[in-house]
Length: 95
Image 1 (cartoon, one colour):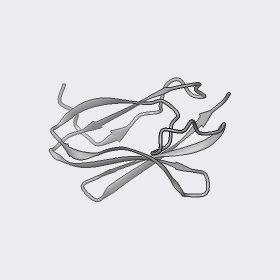
Image 2: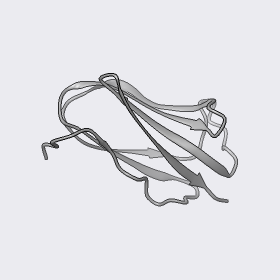
Image 3: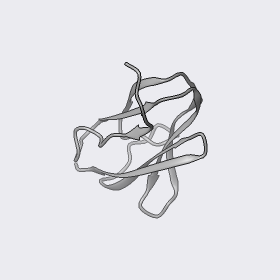
């Protein structure tokens, strides 16, 4: 699979409990940062920070923060940064 453009798909399931899949595509090699923020903009979880080759990727978030504590129900923001471009999506954790 060779994507034509950079894309962050809606997560599934959404709302989710206890985990969700985050799917993204990149058309060219580059450095990716995939992070979860709370609704106030605080970093909750750094999922990926690495160099990726072109393709489609599926990252699982299990509703945990960087200290491996379960996060509370609410709205979170998935942020994908790729080659100085950024896409953000709202996701909902419902317990």
